[in-house]
Image (cartoon, rainbow, N blue to C red):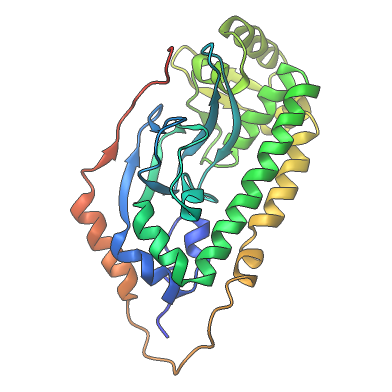
Length: 282
């Protein structure tokens, strides 16, 4: 049995057995995700599924009056547009890149074909749906019960969990969209967090965080959500439902042909990227 390509940077794909992953490999391409790019807009057909390898994407609810509020964020533990595997549908939310990165991309039709043939892929979709639902439910409660300062600290921690380093490239406009508040409110809250030394910010839209102080400023929702979602998306939990077939006779250790094919596809499409499209009303 061929080795699984461990270098894949997305947790859902990395947990798939090699044979199931092999159904997707010929149709995956690697793309760059630019900050503030809109991957899909609320009400539009989902024409691509994204499996981030780095960066952070926010799911944004856009109200008729132009106000926005975030309902969830995903990084390399999840995906964007994955629920279209259950059937063609319009996106209920707008997905916006908040921290730039890279992603593996596949068309819904190609993914749906593999989804119908693979129990492991179906389990990965179920895992993602459970984690996303858990996050959306808890965010709804947090938005109703906790202060803007505590919620901002929580969002910054969620994003920090999904990036390298302690500097987050977030504008006040992006924070306003995440929180569903005016930019004047964001300015006030940023000032308070800066006074408590939980963050440092500058005019280049960079926020440097002090993790212990930021955790102290956040509500209890952050830790509760982190533990709950970590249990859902743990590699052991994902692999437990894949029901991979028993291994066949071992072969000599050679470079995984699946990974070689994916690297070749990356080289052919490395000039492709997702460019920025702004939210309506901004």
